[in-house]
Length: 418
Image (cartoon, rainbow, N blue to C red):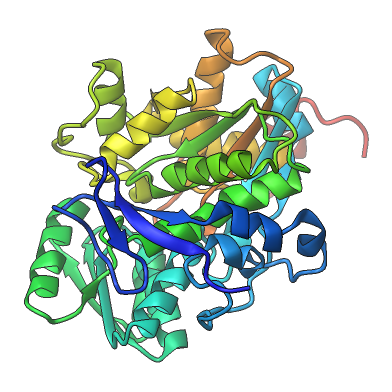
């Protein structure tokens, strides 16, 4: 095996190519696609060869920029599981729902994938300090993988980022700064520092390697589904890199002839109505999104008022015959509880928006009862817990005796036997 990456292409300017054997960022401030010798990949990364490899993201090295020539920065993470959810599916009025649970990765989110590869390539090209703006999980993952690689890291986070994310980033040894603006505003400052030579900017799509790392989500899913892709994929969307990356993975697998069917999943980009630039652009028939002013959502990873890869997300959902869907911000916690109560999975607020999207799609008959549906849980829900009091929790006064007849009548009317 060797490196099968051949070149980079501009994501928006046809015919513009850049060499793959040196560090790349963007071209004319637009993202890049990584391109591969797929015939060469096919001859090396055979299905039978995959069966004997470790169950981590590096099993797909041929479809990553590293090949076998570059040593990865890794924590030996295994595949994230695909969990079948029959009770939840029944509640939604469908037969088949799976949740691909990215919360079981080393830093408890899907951000591990992109950061692992970004740190690998930064180290390979001699970088000693990386930086980014983050709403939370990405910053923590960057800090941990930078530490693993022996590099410095710098992160700008909005001041109201969940404290668990700030703590994770801080503990990693990253130089953490909180800001009084949103992620796109912080990202502009990170870019200024990059242009000044203070660090290498690995913010979303500012370099092509994070996208390739996230592509492994799609490669894993295809293999876990025995090369028969699901009918519907619901993905919580902020910057949208993972949605873009998975669609790229599926197309590469199809071109190599690895898929048992030419039918591709319908991809749905899901947002909260508290921050829905992709949805607004999709509904208006636009290819580029306008900034969502006053963005606010408890799903902090989706609080991206403007995204560099907006056109790539919108191209993906349209090419796949999917859509961009917004759900009510005030119902996100309800959706989290729906899944937790039905299946024992504590999904993150971002993933919870996909529950609302599925509800909408079923009601509109855009998803059939027999469709095979996958929702991505992008992070551990526990990382979002705050210190505030939960609403609607009854209190027990232990200074007084409990009237158990009243207690049972009020709180346990459906309890049968004991």
